[in-house]
Image 1: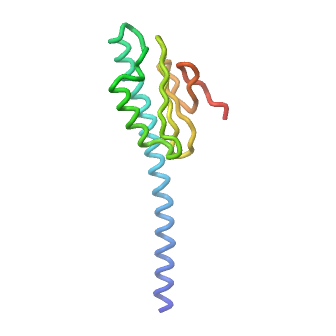
Image 2 (image 1 turned 180 degrees about the vertical axis):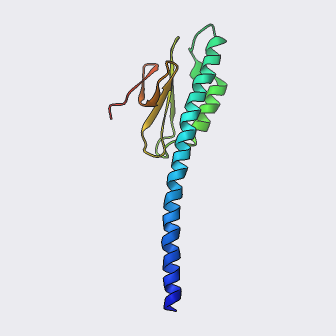
Length: 128
């Protein structure tokens, strides 16, 4: 009987360890999906720009971009699933909160692709 209790305790400890490790991998995968999705929004916005008289105005409201933002929102931080998008005539920036650390990742058409936030229609390094 004691041997059985020891085996059950060992299995319980191992399963806790495995579940803890798996959770970290899920969050890392979700972060990768967010980053790739934000970059995809910029790619779609550049197509929008070319077909919209060389302007990003209203790109954030474009149907394809809106759909992509919704998809990104499913992988963001559970406490904030908002995917921000700001555009003006010549610039566009998108950002979302990462699931693993709750920090904001920002991508813009000038090549910024890092932790940061939107200021105007561009990404800036966050003050953290």
